[in-house]
Image 1 (cartoon, helix red, strand yellow):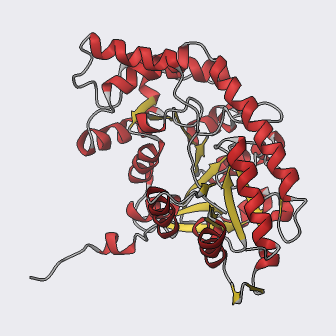
Image 2 (cartoon, rainbow, N blue to C red):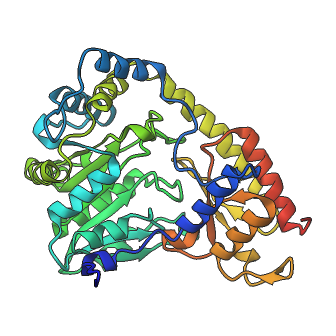
Amino acid sequence: MQTYISEMAKAVSPSPTLFLDAKYKQMKKDGIPVVGFGAGEPDFATPENINKAAISAIENGFTKYTPASGTVELKKAICEKFRKDCGLEYNIENIVVSNGAKHSLTNIFMAICEKGDEVIIPAPYWVSYPEMVKMAGGVPKFLDTTEENDFKFSPDELEAAITSKTRALILNTPSNPTGMVYTEDVLREIARIAVKHNIYVILDEIYEKLIYEGEHISLATFGEDIKNLTIVVNGMAKAYAMTGWRIGYTASNADVAKAMSNIQSHATSNPNSIAQAASVEALLGDQSSVEQMRIEYIKRRDYMVERINSIDGISCRKPNGAFYIFMNVKDLLGKEHYGKTFNTASELCDDILERALVAMVPSEGFGIDGYVRLSYATSMENIKEGLDRIEKYIKNEY
């Protein structure tokens, strides 16, 4: 029997980081003392007030279907969050609640992309963006950035990348994998260009609560024209340590929201009812745990940046948000280490995992060569031990 696979499915690439991740998990399962810098999730427990809200929902029988695009209560809480945090006014018809921000993004591309439409994706980028665009029939168009410019594109570079086929720009700020944050003046220029060319801005703000210098400024606040073209993506995972709860949400103009809601109603129906109830408490309840986590991330970031930049052969920029360090390893490539020469970050990461027992994420999956991503969503003890091992590896002491 011949197996048939669609052309769309064939075009979607597996994550290039999955091999190393699977290897790390197997080593850990086998009892090998591996230090992991790969996790893209908070190492903190979900705050207790959120857990109690979930338990209460179960005990009160809130375990049935909800409206496909989310409960009215959660949508109202999201609208209040936007009003309070960003100064943005939305109504419940502008909000779609999904099974995580990844699901929200998939809904967006399916709702706005025709076959052949281009979506501008600044590189380095989160690994799933290009594949999501391809799944919707769109064409990823990469806009390369440089470390010298803090991995951020300029307004002129954006304008040069726009063509008659451009449907949208993805703007992830704070960024995964670099942790960089776009400034207000640049955001205003991006908004001006988007309005001029009538293209959507898919504004991924999942790390919005994790900004370490200055205040969060949303591009959608710069007037009704850009607000109408902006599709804001956010979720509960990063700010509230709720990765497994799978609640993401979008805010957009009502027509886009309705299209996404219709798509979701056929694909998945509603997000988890219990997680929705917990998310209402997360957004409207005590916010002190968010600030406590943010303060701890700052301590970890500052230690890692100083330590990495003190080790010969590696370096990094100081990120302004999220919980990632994007470390430059170009000086280690093309040179012999332990009798081998590694030409890619993937090869180097594999050897470091094998020899020094440290797991990192190579940059090829993010659309750039010569870097590795390290997450500081792990304990200070692990951070110190992991960096000790990396330094020892570089000094050929294994």
